[in-house]
Every structure is written in structure tokens, then in C-alpha cells.
Length: 232
Image 1: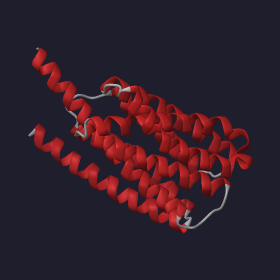
Image 2: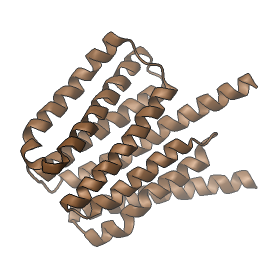
Image 3: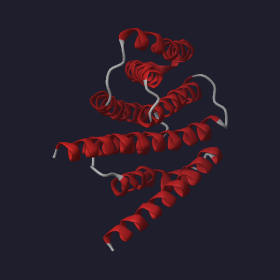
Image 4: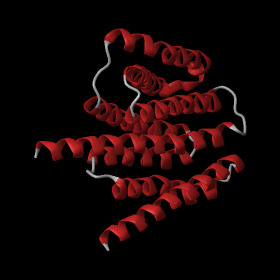
């Protein structure tokens, strides 16, 4: 009975995540702040419920990281410099937690592979920075820190994927690639040139990237659960 209830909650939270994602994407396309305000705050909570019902061993640090990205999502609804800055700070904390958890759960690739793998990510961020740095103002340090983390995590995930293309490494690489493209789109939209499709595209990538990140941590949780089971 308990297993059936858990399965039903998983299904409902999965449907809720998809439906909320569609509403938020549509809201971003139409620039409907009211629709975004009514749906976006529930997006990450739906993902948290989905994670809690699917995982074999709860990683509370991952849940805490999702709390910070949830706060960032809410702050980003109000498009003022102050709220964007606070949202970026919360988003940075999210990535600090995620980077730590990835390092804990995966082996560090060899130095040569890692250095080669960070080149394309460094190139993308340098190009974006050259385009937007004059308009970032107070957010320049947060942009730099977020960029540094994404370059590191991008190179790390790409190098690990080439060494061992298992499920966690594949999911992580897909997720990081999407998050990198999101930062490119959002930065260009905010500080260089705005196009109507940028925001909905970024939101589509965001919900998809979060799903693949969820799959990554579910794989980590399963590996840790199975490892502890063998040891006991």
C-alpha cells in the first residue's frame, strides 16, 4: 500500500513538473508576469517531491541546493538590478553545493583530460564576457564566479564522460551543457540584445537541465545505496 502511494505521488509530481514547466515557458514567451508568478514558484518544489519519492537514499545537501535555486527562480521574476543580483547570488550558492556533491561522488579525471576539456567552456564564457561586461555593473563578480564554476564543472564532466560514459557522467554532461547555454542566453538577453525567444528557450533548457541533474543525483544515490548494502 505504501509503495503504491509513493508511486502515485511520483506520477503526480512528474505530471505537475511538466505542466508547470509548460506554463512557465508560455509565460516567458508572452512576458506574462502574472502567469509566471503563479507557476514558477511551484516548479522546484514539484522537482523536490519527485526526487524524494524516487531516490533510494535522500541526499539532503542536494535538496538544500534546490532550495537555493528555488529562491533564485523567485527573485528572477522581478527584473530589477537588485533582485537579479540577489538571484544570481542564490544561484551561485546552488552551484557551489552541486559542484561539491559532484566532486564527492565522482573520481577526478586525469589532469591532461581536464585541461583539454575546459577549453571549449572557457572560450564560450570569454566570448560572452566580452559582449556583456560593460553593462553588468555590480554583477560582474557574480558573473565571473558563476562562470568559473561552470567552466570547472563543464571541463570536469566532459573529461569524466570521455573516460567513462556511464549514466551519471552522461546525465551530468547533458545537464552542464544545457546550463552553460542558459547562462549564455540569459546574459545576452539581459546585457546585450533582447529577443523574444531567448527567455522561453532558456526556461525550456532550465527545466530539462534540472531533470537531467535530478537523474544524475538519483544515479549517485543508487550507487551509494548499493555500496552501503554490500558493505553491510
